[in-house]
Image (cartoon, rainbow, N blue to C red):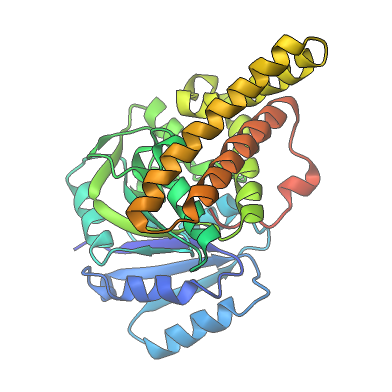
Length: 340
């Protein structure tokens, strides 16, 4: 049986890190064949205490904590890869929980050569019990919110452009030079692009499941999606051919609305056109949210989901536009960014 290294970038995840470690301890894959490597960006909360407590309570589990003073996701991942001893490497995040057979199914898919990078489906859960967090989770797993992102939509197994987290042979990651440390977000998509350009395959296995906890406030969601858009733009500058329709629509929508707004200052006819576009957009969001609200018996979703989707669309779109026009500042490249 092959040895597996689970690598986890982490920063201030005291609320979820023990849940992740418990999920790994309960795996169907033998615990003595796994090692858990956590690249911690010098957390300032109780994250390390939670890790140490779990390690003390489960002495048969190999948990290694390494410092990530740069405090970015790709740097943490590369540090963990360097420390890994397993033949297979599986990347997870500190605010996720894998299904009990996650590791077993990832290893099996790699052994059967389904793909050079194998991943599964995200089951998106709210960050807390509030209606805002619930609305964000529903928006983040809806087609109108995220387009045709297969891993968010419970899509069938098959070849895809990217998967969340990812399972690899260590030899492949070393051969590829690891993750690009100049991309603070979208580093996984960029790696998958390089793999595909070399003739490799990215495989989504629908039976591989993990729970991902979405953001719990609109402010955190806005920051997350603006960051997604900005760093997606940095990747597109290198690989413009990788743009997908679902990724192009938000910035085009933002540009279109801004153009209509400017023109409407000089022509009343365009004021009505702008209002018609906004009304149609809001109506579509409200109708789609109504079905989810009824299904889940959560009336607040009728308002909460449209707000979440608008934040996702406008922040992603404006972040991508700004990213295409600007280069990352020194502050951006040195900020804490150690989670999805």
